[in-house]
Image (tube, rainbow, N blue to C red; front, side, top):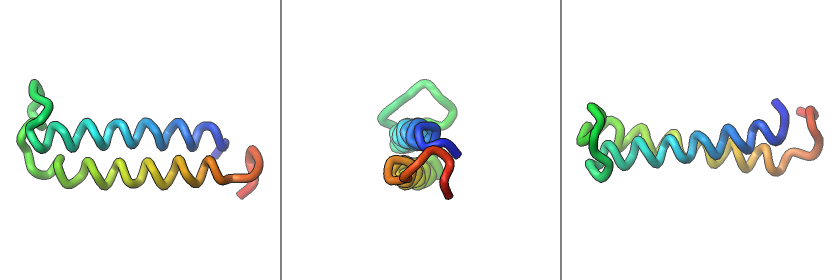
Length: 66
């Protein structure tokens, strides 16, 4: 996966995870996910995965090297 794609995908996952966390905790309303505990658990996990993906992409040396 290209380095910049990994960083962007990681950032999107972080934002999505934060959104899901906020909905699960009831901080963000207007969704069937609001107040549902499972999203308060899944959200931080997705955000953490996004951070790991972005860091891995940022540390990667070249464009397509494994």
